[in-house]
Image (cartoon, rainbow, N blue to C red; front, side):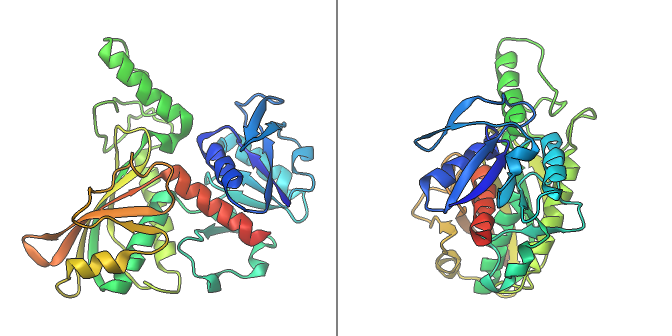
Length: 336
């Protein structure tokens, strides 16, 4: 078993990593490390086994083959500084804290072909897991392009509150309760009313602007679409990110124009892979709730555009936390 330190073990992302490691044969032994807001020394579990959460110190990374960054930006920066002093320790960043480092490499094993990864890629590079929305769209567009050449696409992305971790989920919950009891709304994360509302822009005091996340998704998607392999060369879509009043899971509405008039049955059968579940016309369309805890993406509600015979509508759903975590664990498995 290879030891990998998990910084942010009790965050939403950290819990997903713990669940994947506990329920699959990964060859990984997790060393739980507290985030800045976690209590050092607390007792928890990884699967059926008890585990103690340690502090973020040089000893936490000593002998670890890699370290998952799944906590706050502050904890990520501290862990990066500690990892720089550890020979042979690779950083697997699920938060974007290390994205601007010159040795960072964007990763998404569910999208990459096996030929894209070489053993030497892990020697010094920081492995940054691509944004889950970018991974979901790259899976969809590359596979679709290999079935029927895509000319252009327009995609609306509906983000959940869990994009901002526990703080985002708790703020949406608090806003809903406050609205129903006629109390002042908590707005520390979004600086706007999200409950019962759709947001195209956050308030000026929001911690992270919605436009910043949209640009990050766009950058990561452009990189993933340019990777060699099946579906290579698909045109970059026009994207718009909307904050939805949902707790968990991404949804996507996609309009796709093809090089020729498509056949719906061909699209449905051709899209199916190990990472893509397709709901045909006889099944209910996928939802963010139904996709919770599931890997990959689900695609459904495929229908022709009544005004454009060469275009179709698609509806996609993905568990943002599970998608990020399963790609992070896949990088760790390649590493060990």
